Image (spheres, rainbow, N blue to C red):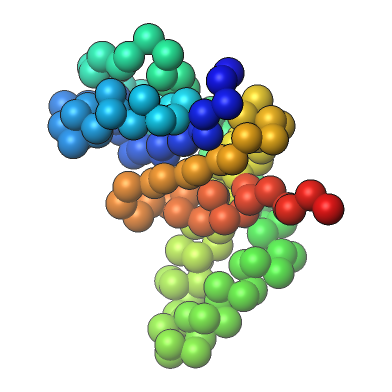
Length: 151
């Protein structure tokens, strides 16, 4: 890869849907300044959009225990989960339903963060930029995947 910073676009469906015209229009311009990787959370639909040759497209790998409560239990022991639960409690919106939703979101975000950390771009010293359009269950992943500043 060149010395351009890496821009990782985390999308719900693009380029595996007919939506996302703005991305299709923006990618050639962004490609001039960034090495682009698109990670689609869509693991079902075929790619329907064309991409420039040097844009890397990957899909989010499906977790082996996607629907299992057991895959979410470790999240109950993380400082990150409880800090988010505390925010909900302060806003007086921490119900059982919200608690379970937050557990799901934090668990999925940590799963994507582990995936982001496994990519070659993460191991290189060049700057990383993550962008996720619209809120989704993986919203915290870029935060959880941040690199510590090297001293």
